[in-house]
Length: 219
Image (cartoon, rainbow, N blue to C red; front, side, top):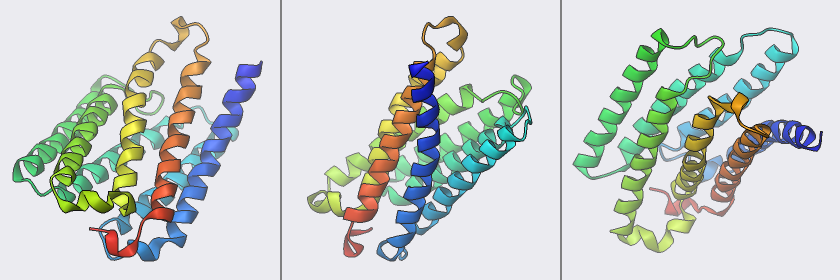
């Protein structure tokens, strides 16, 4: 019972932390509105709308609401790949990320023949995209370490966004794999609790970035 209460409270908290993150991102929009990160705010509000829409659909008694989350993953990962491709400078890195995006999109639509996106949460395309995104973030960090931008990296919003995304997806890969076998795992609720905690940590990183970043330290 305690685990169930914890899980339900965490699930509820995540939605409101998503909302808080979007609000804070809006308040500090003036810091990054002159950069491509301004489009990241749109993604944050999309997450909020998607989460509350999913909750509403579930409360209305409809069985199939996973389609909106699967569509969200397609939009979100595509945006992130395009975004990091824009920010990295090395041409090889740009090429790799371009192929990451192409492979992910092919896997997403190809996987439609294996899974029903209306009542099944996609797995293989998500794992592919998460792994590729970790690599794209590694490219970005590698380039930052080789420039004087590393001296004020903690004042840069993209750095904090990247940290949040990196921590989230490193933890999300094993939990997404385990979710396919959750019925066979004792105390499987812990998997969902871990995913909620990962989401909270990611949002905290975003919030730190919005608050601590400086307008003239964006690039």
